[in-house]
Length: 85
Image 1 (cartoon, helix red, strand yellow):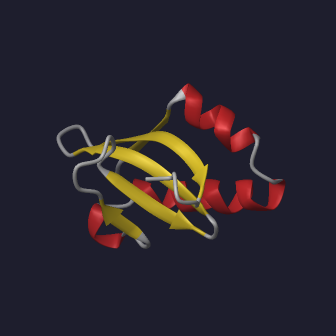
Image 2: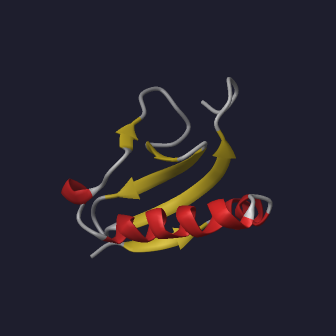
Image 3: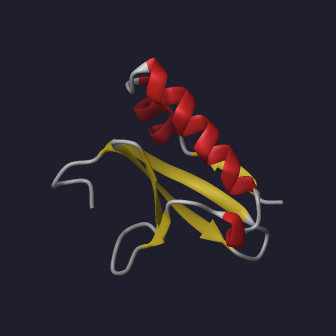
């Protein structure tokens, strides 16, 4: 099992997302507590500030995954546009 850690910036961004999407995003992020082989809609990012991104509807959850202690650090929640990544 992985431990999920929300960075304060990501929490603030999540609060600005419409309520309907907030629930979907939280459920999707909770699924990251499973082993990495079971992650859906997750893509490894190359030459980016963060290691991975997860697609949740029109939103993207950007996160880092530290394989040793198995901590998933949620860094940002952003609406998908040309400046997201």
